[in-house]
Amino acid sequence: MQEVYKDNPFIEVNNVSFSYEKSDIILKNITTSFYKGEITAIVGPNGSGKTTFGKLLTGILTADHGYILVDSKNVEEITLGSIGKKIGYLFQQPSRQLFNPTVREEIGFAHSFMGKSKEVVEQKVNKIIEEFSLEGLEDSSPYRISRGERQRVALASIFINKPTFLILDEPTTGLDIVRKDKLSMLLQNLKSQGIGIILISHDKKFINKNATRVIELSGGELHET
Amino acid sequence: MKLDPRTKLVMVFSLSTLAVFVVDVLLLSIVLIISIIVANFFKANWSFLNRVRKFIILLIGIAFLQSIFSPSGQVLFSIQNFTLLTTGGLAKGLRVILRMLTIIISATIMKGSSPREIIQALIQWRVPFELAFMVSLAIRFIPILGQEAKDAFTAIQLRGIEIDKLSITKRFKVYSYMFMPVLSGIVHRARELSTSLEARAFRAYPERTSYIKLKLSRYDFLIMSISVTFTMIVLTIYLLMG
Image 1 (cartoon, each protein chain N blue to C red):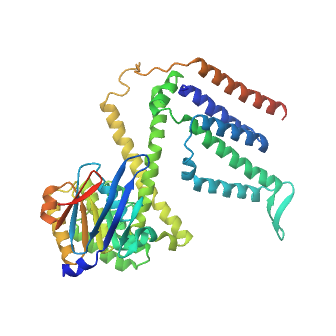
Image 2 (tube, rainbow over the protein chains, first blue to last red; image 1 turned 180 degrees about the vertical axis):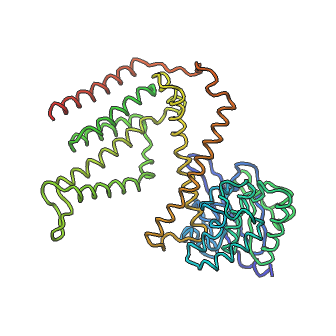
């Protein structure tokens, strides 16, 4: 099944370069593709541009040169909202992507906002809460729980949208061994469903266990390892 | 020529005071031109105007509202019996724009002075260190707060919310969601910072010594005197003329 996906890259990066204002080039002429049903790990030293690359892929940042296609559409020509329907993005600091007063509301936010019925939202939220072992935290504030729990809430609120592709920036930060194992199982399960995943991480053990492909960013260049 | 931050603060204060007290549109324009010249002299980075572009649009909007709700003078534009633009209203609107631009542009004079130098300037003016430190922290955190608000807005959209397709009421609702992570970030950071400051024995002794000592040069005294004298003369003439 994976071979079918190999013919149709979900994300295509073509000769992309990027630099922040008043700084050296962070990424130089990068060309690569990402496929559904594949877990790609992006590794590299601090400041090598891993998070920047992830942000370029989701259209949060715009490339100086080159272009990126998501599902055959140029990211610069589509809105973040429509990218969000296809790609789930986990920020390096999950507290920046939580904006509701309770965990329950946080997870159900997108569905309630789009006007889905209360019953449907409740049902989906309860399922996700169980999947991410968030029982007992439903009515807590996402800002008053531990970092690991916050990470899980952020992940849960992404997963409820059933994205086709996931970009997870340091998803294992703050997770204990049990939670990491659970995340591994979840990622493998998603992979088998044909969902593509990009893992931006320093966690070698987690990468070795889960990634089907590892690419390294260093000196602004990308190397397949 | 590197000026003392105190001199720059005096200049900013003088120009801002003039911008607040002067009512005449022509004189306000002159104050704005002076601000631009001075800011240019201090090599202001005008690219910031691009960043505050939306703010300028808001200013123009406010100016129009001023013009509509406090009409006076000759009617310039009206639809049936509803007056939209008058000469007095237009002048009021122009005043708002000129004042705000003068304050924003004059603030760029401080560019080139580090937050540490600004704290030292305030301390040497006998402002308590705690207050000076708070001011510098506030200045330092403004861009971080902006980035957090931007991140929150991006995160909301990445949940599949297409802002452009929302009604105005729903759009406002989306904007209201941005406050939660920003406020939480402020409280969290304030707590961590206070712990960190306590751990480094902040305020352990009543007297503080400083590694940096600022010294006013002849040019500093000259520029400060010119700034204060010019402001005083303009304001006195203004008050005397009513």
